[in-house]
Image (cartoon, rainbow, N blue to C red; front, side, top):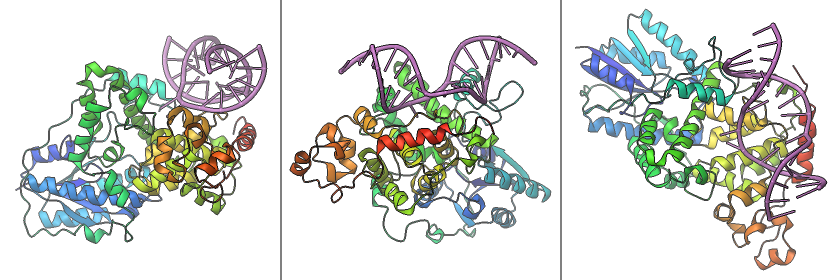
Length: 476
DNA sequence: TTTTGAGTTGTTCGA
DNA sequence: GTCGAACAACTCAAA
């Protein structure tokens, strides 16, 4: 009997899973295996919110495997040892997996591939996570892109329409004697119950991901181009954590989008967002130092402020006194997610107004986001800080008051996450420090008591940021 | 090699 | 209130 190990990593789905399909086509028995090995992810071990998601996603995967006649085997790392061990236990001759693109994962997988091949095993990897792999979209001589638009043009020219693969109808059973660790033994869930908001906001797993895609296409795609920028609205797809864990793949999304010709505008706009995800992976693969170091080397000696503990805590906990920033940071803390528009505003405030190193922000997002993804997080923070690919020009400092008035004109987003300001009327809710004393009193808000005074003056901190950025060296 | 056009997401100021 | 210009040159990408 030929046996193939299917090593699940961040491709936690049965549909459009090329490694799984190939395993089923070429072996009589397939062993679905997940190995818990966070220490192999170097400085970017999954954060608390990611671990919560992973726990439930693995449970969902095990459930769908069982419905198809199999089950998920769970082991602990080191990954190579676990693969060898399961190989011995099952007599597997092949090991297949879908590729990852983080520098630590690339290095590990390459070493594992060599070692297993030296053992005499057949090892193959596949692409489940991206429309095009990082090395497939390049400039003339194979150099990587650093600007989104030409990258996007090339991606388009190459075509996006490779169809997703079908889900297997049935899987061969596993021998009952094969031992699996329990999910609980991985201790992925928090010991203190802070995950209520996550449970309310999300349902991890492949079927929930498909349901969300269908809901998005049915309800939000038409207005996507505008509504996706409105944090109070349900205008985004909400697919980011599902994509991160591979509960859904981009090919499946593209196919669903392309089936909606009558909503071509929204579909095109969302396709572009998917392309940003592709671009982020492209950059991380070709510039593997960027999770920790600026892509633009002029920033190596940029005068970041020493991150003073109290200010950083205020930002993390949504106590900066800037309503839109605080709303976003509290949404993040409670739901494990923050609206994209507000991510930019909150990040810009930390990096430009407070001039705290972008890595401090990146690390906090890493720990608290359910969609924490090294490629996207790195691109996002470096973009805001001005030191990344296609970075925001240095003079682009988001004004959280204007952004609030423009994108949360009713103030409902702030009201939802900063309830102590809920009774303030509309323009005032975005800058309570400028509201008349009588108004504040009438709605029972004492600044500095019920809600903080701003930790930074927007005007002067902006000017100081511009001065610091102006002082950047012209070249390295 | 040289040249040319273009570059996610903004704010402020003055007319 | 609305509009255009300034912000600052530089790098990227392609011809």
